[in-house]
Every structure is written in C-alpha cells, then in structure tokens.
Image: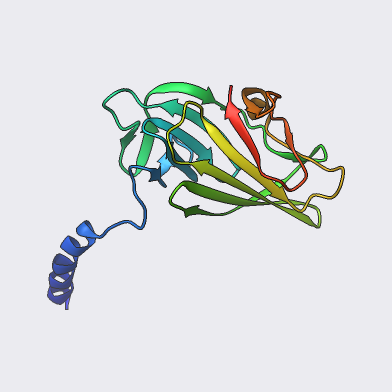
Length: 189
C-alpha cells in the first residue's frame, strides 16, 4: 500500500511542478509581501509595483524596481525590492462618517488593461463596496481609480491618513475622501 502511494506521488510530482498559474506572476504576485500575510503586489507599467494589505484594503508600499531587476525577491513570501515611492506602515484604516469599518476582501480580477480589486466595508447594518482599478499600462504617473457604492447623499468614505496625504485627485487636491458613486482617479504626488 505504501509502495503504491509513493509510486503515485512520484508520478504526480513532476505534473505539479509544471502546472501553470492562472495569472501572470510578472504582473501580479499573490504571495505574502514584506511580511504581510494576506497581501498582493501588482505591477503598473514596466517597473512600478503597488503592494496591498488585503485585510485592511490599504496600499502599503509603491516602489520602482531597480533597472534590470523584477522588483520582487523570494518565492512563497516575497520582499519588495527597489526605490520606495510611497510607504504606509501605520495601522490607520478607512473610515465611514468618522467611524472605523469592518473590511472584507472580495477578490481580484485580471483584465487586459487593468487589475480590479474589490472590498466590502461594514459599519453596523450598512454595507459599502469599494472597487479599485490599477491600470497596467506604463505612464508617467502612478495611478489608481477608486469607486465606492452604497453611500447616501452627504456621506463619504475617508482614506487612511497616509494615503490621503500622498495621493492627489485630477484637480490637484489631496485625495482624502470618496463620495458620490463615481470613479475617481488618484495619482501619487
């Protein structure tokens, strides 16, 4: 019995080694980043990476890979490598009407021109959905598109403090809050 199991395992092991992942690891890495267990790294353009803490729905680091390098080092747990453009090691989170929210990661989708991340935010019995698009095309700026659904008139969702200070809207204002259910583009200043 044990011999059959070992033979089966020996035949199966090479098949597992060549199995293809359902995503391009040179564009997105779904392994733990910089010691953050549930995190994801997304490449924007040729050398910019955005690293997210999925449990908090926060951007923890944006970096430029060094010339000739991928921007990530390691295998199962990876380390970001390159010039830091933005970093947030705080525990600050999103707030809804000045109250903290309960965050649930809903998933990531891969499109030809972007990756799309989705979270659900809860505050009491009410629920919001935040969608973030990360364009994959190379540009002169680091950009993210955000949309929140479920807010009532006059309500807003406030970004974590470090993000609100570092990111700007297309009007050049600090991207401190989102409202209205429309897409808003924010760029790293």
